[in-house]
Image (cartoon, rainbow, N blue to C red; front, top):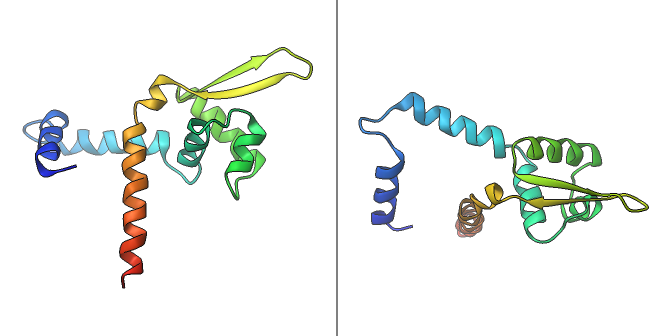
Length: 125
């Protein structure tokens, strides 16, 4: 994002005069919903086509079954993923990203880019 784009976004998002309390609350709300070690990797996995619980679990090294279950329930409550149960034998459960989840896809892409750039910057030392 170049400086002009950043300035336009800041003008759109930030109040004038600046309201520090409102900005901190918005940051805390965002961190509450997508923060932690596992939420973004789970979203990334689901957006990459992994829909079944075990597919998601296998795609994320180090996550436990219990943690994945807890995070998926939390993400469903926050309307980031949709859980669909198909009454087959055995029952099929699939998770899919909601439109709301896709609304911060650009943020995730910027985070991935930043992370790659940061890793390269550290290697230059």
